[in-house]
Length: 55
Image 1 (tube, one colour):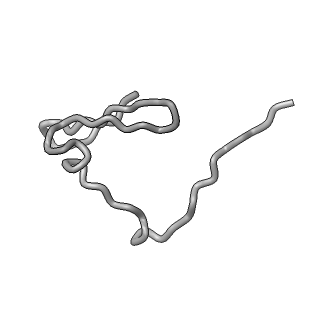
Image 2 (cartoon, rainbow, N blue to C red; image 1 turned 135 degrees about the vertical axis):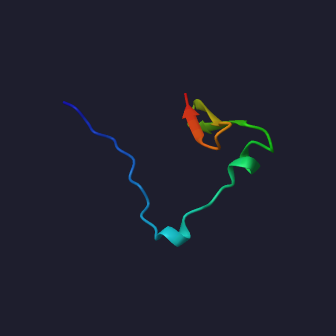
């Protein structure tokens, strides 16, 4: 027997979504670590001003 345990997303209007400035997250640098449960991800701001999120 297989049980599907999916997280339910909270539905909110766009104007109620939290907004985070990437430069605040990186404290003015170009890298930050983001933790979700027991996993760490790396947020990188590229020279072109784009964001990359990796495990």
